[in-house]
Length: 160
Image 1 (cartoon, helix red, strand yellow):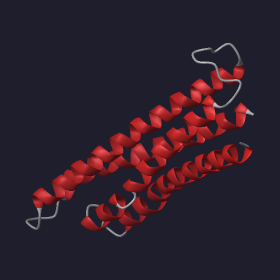
Image 2 (spheres, one colour; image 1 turned 30 degrees about the horizontal axis):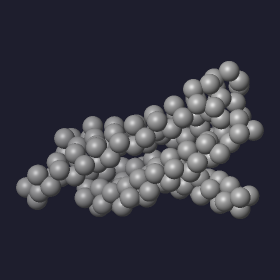
Image 3 (cartoon, helix red, strand yellow; image 1 turned 90 degrees about the horizontal axis):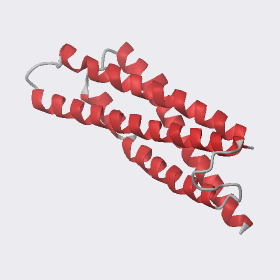
Image 4 (spheres, helix red, strand yellow; image 1 turned 120 degrees about the vertical axis):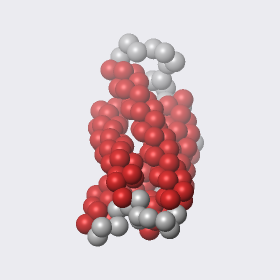
């Protein structure tokens, strides 16, 4: 049983690191490099950003399943009981996770809309300023997810 608990915790931690690390990589490396190289509105950047989406959803589901398992097998967990500090912090952590999933869905929707916009315009003309708001909103969602992820990590540290 101890090995299973260790394996689930390790998988949970690995998924969080991949999710937040990938989001940070996009926000800190891909967006600024694309903007500096004047390729922000190109299909190359879009293809690079779309390549990360399967990892995001794999990590989201892994974090969800392992988090639920860790929560249910913890002897301190009681459904809808927020009488102690541990339960309140766990509830806040769950709220932060739901917000992160919400912003990840928003990011994916912006990316899909941007992809449709670039396909519709095709080779006729460069997209210009039409896609600028999509990129800025995607960057905003990434930064929000990074901030929420840091908050979730701090809440996890407070659970001990």
